[in-house]
Length: 258
Image (tube, rainbow, N blue to C red; front, side, top):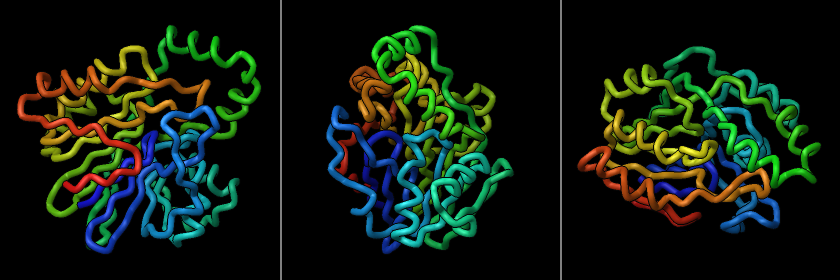
C-alpha cells in the first residue's frame, strides 16, 4: 500500500493498480505553508474519491479531479449539493445517508461512519478573527458556500489492513468506543480546529490503539484562516497514550509504503 499526504486532510492511496483519494484539496493561496505545487490538473488517476464533509478545504478540487479522472465521489447529501453547484454531474456522486454503509471495490472496501466536526473553541475563533479582519466578508461567504453537512469518517480495508481516516476531530467518546470494537491498523488523525487539538487527537489514539498513526491537517493551508500546528508534541505523546503505536509524520507529496 502506498499512501501519500497532499496536505490538509487529503490523501492518495494506491493498492496494486487501484488508486483512490480522500479529501483531495490542492488549492492554496500564496501564503500557504508548506507550498503545495500540485494542482487538480496534475491528478491523472483515481477510481474513487471519498469526502469527509463539505467544507471548502475538503471538497473544492473534487469536481475537477472527478471530471478529469472519471472517479465517482462518495459523500453526504449536503456536500453532494455543493459539488453539483460547482458543476459535477449528479450521476457521478454517491450519497451516503446510512451510518456504516459499505462499498466494495474488489481491491479494497470503504465503510462510512457518521461523525462530528470539531467544535472551534473561543480562543481559536478570536485569534482567527483577529488575523482575518480584512477578509471577514470572504470568510463568511466561504462558510456559507461550503456548509459542513453530515461529517463522515472512512474505514478502508486495504491489503488486509484497516485504515481509518478522520477529516475532523469531533468524535464523541461513544463513537470512538463503537469504532474501537474492531482493530485499526492505520489511524489518520487530524490536527486542526481547536486550541487543545493535540490532546483531542491523543484521545483517538487511546481509544483506537492503532499500530500506526499518521497526523495530518496540521499545515497552514489557507492563511489567515488556518494556522500551522506543530505535530511534534503529538508524535512524542502518542506512543505513551498507546504503547506499541508507531507515529509517522508525513511529508507533503512524499509516498509512504506501508
